[in-house]
Image 1 (tube, one colour):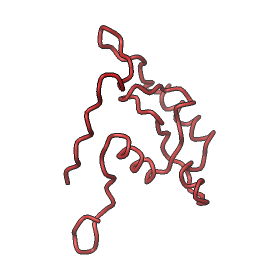
Image 2 (image 1 turned 45 degrees about the horizontal axis):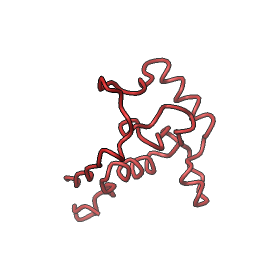
Image 3 (image 1 turned 60 degrees about the horizontal axis):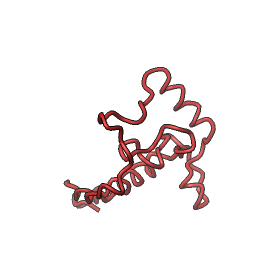
Image 4 (image 1 turned 90 degrees about the horizontal axis):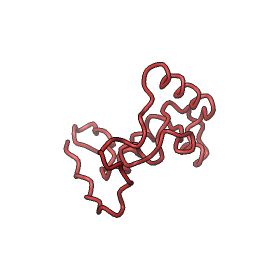
Length: 110
């Protein structure tokens, strides 16, 4: 299945980047990243999107509200904890793609 490409942004809407092309912030990796993920999931144990509609689903993914690839930061203020399903939907929306909804019993995409 192919997804439509995200629309190109104009230079004014892009986040600022250093002149040398480096990223503004380095992403935590290894043990520090695992500890940060554990701490965030403990602080927000239920999916934020499910909670808004009255469902109680455990959160499994700390999601960047503004993705790092689009200039977001790794600060706690830029994180929302979601279930896997809502994370997939939100990520597809953020990058201009339609979320994959699965395959029906006839083998065709839903």
